[in-house]
Amino acid sequence: MPEPVTDSVRERRYRILVAGYALSSYGSYLNVVALNLYVYAVTDRALAVGAFMAVRLAAGIVAGLLAAPILARWSARSVMFWVNVVQATVLAVLVAAPDTLRTPVLFVVSAVGGITGTVFLVALRSSVIPEMVAEDRRTWANSLMVSGRSLAMVAGFASAGVVVSLLGYTAAFLLDMATFLVCAVAVAQLPVTRRPEKETAKAGIGAGTGTGKQRRKLPAAVVVLAGAPVLGLMVLLRGVDALGSSSHNAALPVYSTELDTDSPATFVSVFWCVWAFGNIVAQQVIQRLPRRSEQALGALGFGLGTIVMSGAFILAFAGLPWTATVLIALVAGAADGLTEVSYTQHLQALPDRLRTHAFGLSATVESFGFGAGMIAVGAALDAFSPLSVVAVAHGVAIVIAVLFVALVLRRRSTEPASAGTGAGAEARAEV
Image (tube, rainbow, N blue to C red; front, side, top):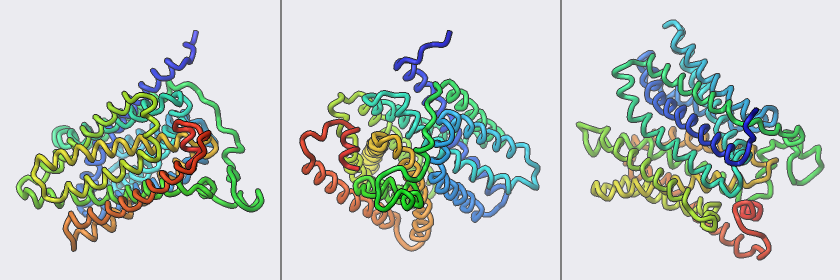
């Protein structure tokens, strides 16, 4: 007799899903290193490595727009299961491909990884968590997801060099393939959730001006943001934050080399390990917050966290002593963890007909911001110092975050007392 799907059963299955997601994330982060090295080894051209990353980012941009229609047609469980199977399959094809086909297969792997990774995350955030976890437990659910991914990032980056140098590229690809299959098994144990109504999938999903026929001509994501200044600015800030992230990701190797020419990897490794530790500590605190305190994790928490995080990343390149820099990396990781949970939780409070479109649009904006940032920052670092490049990129994020916080506070001050409390009320009032 099947086990009744109670709230406790759902949470237990969600924990299994997070474990599978963390494991597949470990494989993905390991492959970020292994695949980039392998592309260079196969092509012997640095340009090919850049093109490989560009294909993945471009695929992620497109996938953000495709995620909502896909999830409107098929259940989140089915989508998440098959994207893991597809990722495992293309890695198996890469391992079996003859030498003459390795380069084109590598770019197929890059495109598939960008599409499937984005669709999986949109499905997880917009459908699985809201449907499996009660609203008063979403903070815990989001925080657990971010914790698992942070641990996976540290483990993946830390072990990539060892796995590739000792076992080789094939072993790294097969290990990543196995993690996707394990994640697919974890997804398969999820309960079957309702299939979205066909009407939800249509473009005429919300309010707007003009007739219904005119509204259907607009992309659904545009309809979501029409008349939603706080949500629109929130998504914009997320994209600018991604641009800021590209600046410190590109500048860290340059800055680390300037600090220690003989061992440039030391600063990068220590910085990211401390950053991840700060992120994990923040998640542990968030998971233990009392219910009343969780209300601060919505739009306002996202804006304030972005200000602190961007300021910390700027200070990290200021040439301060090691002790101060380590503390700054800790703060940056903690603030990054806060913004991730706050942002996700706010979008999850949107009505069902809007939520998936908002997450899909957000994924597109983030991928575009990071991709455009990598191009612009890469060019800027040839002419300017890492500190100035990071300060400009994250400085823009701080300015927009300040405007965003001011808008949120202004809206809160004009809200009627009867507007309600909690994340759901906050999202309804601020959208």
